[in-house]
Every structure is written in structure tokens, then in C-alpha cells.
Image (cartoon, rainbow, N blue to C red):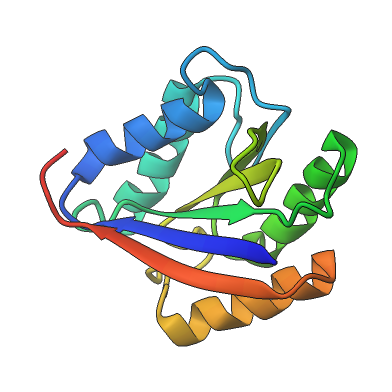
Length: 165
């Protein structure tokens, strides 16, 4: 079973966005197996931050939730980095038409998963300025998409952080 966790922090502001981008770029000194972006250049966390901030400023939406952070922990049936990275790229396409995304794949044995992906989406659409809707209904549609990519059943959970970071 693929486990999908949606992390939201509505009070962390720009610091939370910067920290999340830095984490996917360089997880405590560990280089990810894959790192790519849609609408952003993943060369550095600062570049990604500035490009996402530019979209927010253009549409006048610089406060509140800065990003949506999704973690997809792949089922143990995913046994190699190539498959995990391919899944990550395909899964991130779900958001590509409307939102800037950064995605990476990590290898870390977490009991039921050898590989996991981080997908960070700008909370503001670059096409129309609409905010990312991470309602349970919309995220269940995302889970269906992940199932179609991996062939595995999915489990969805939400993690909300409402403290100053």
C-alpha cells in the first residue's frame, strides 16, 4: 500500500516554504535520488523559493498557506530507485498544468517502504492565481491518480501544523 501524507502549515509563512525547499534539495546532507521541478529551476532552494514567491506576488497572494507538501511512501513492492524515481515524475504530473512543483525521491527504509517522494506545490496557481485546494475530496482524487500510476492501493493522511516555525 502506498501511503500519502499531506502536510499543511498555515502559520509557518515564508520560513516554512524555505525550509521545505531546502529539505527536498539536500536532506540533512543527503543528496536525493532524483530532484526536478515544474515551473521552477531546482538548482538551489533559493532559486525555487524566489520563483514560487514571484507567482504569489504577481497574483497578490503572499500570506497564509505557502505550499502543499505531499509525501508518497511507496509500497515495499517498489524495490529499485529507477522505479521509485519514475513513479515520482509521473505522479507530479498531476499538478503540472496549474502549479509549480518540486519533487524528489529518497531511499530510506521506513519499515513498510524503501522509497518515498516529496512533492512540494506552490499554493498559488501560476495559470490563474487560484489557491491549491487540498480538501479531502480533492486529495482522494490525487490518491486515485497515484493508484493508477503504481497499481498499489493508497492510504491518505493529513498532518497539520499550526505553530510558528
